[in-house]
Length: 172
Image (tube, rainbow, N blue to C red; front, side):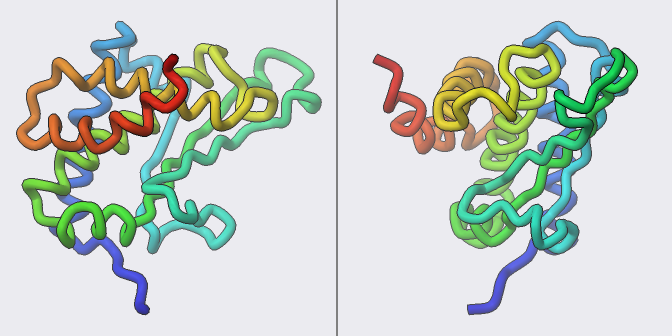
């Protein structure tokens, strides 16, 4: 089976979802645009990622660049860079081949979810080298649900419902 990639129309929808998600996260966490300058990120589609950045079966994978904590010698060493690597064909499979009415709300969820990871790392709520990955993923799913529940984007309620069972697994 041949891997499917985002095409130009999908990338336009992605750009819109990134913009909306960044605004949602900025409002929710009461951060200024300066936060994004101190914690730069980029979003890459499957065509643009290196083979070792390939996110596997997920919809996206966050890669955090920076020095290992044991190599840091000063506060200047804490500079980080984040890359959100999208797994195009998994996303397209979940959105009827990328039809706008299903793709846009799905990307808002996926990008917001990855931004929550960035916020948690940048605010030292967790550390990717030390904290349990599954536990962190549950916390991020729950936070993403809380953040997006009041947001009015057509089709987002169905996306939230799709992720709700996953986020509820370890809630009790």
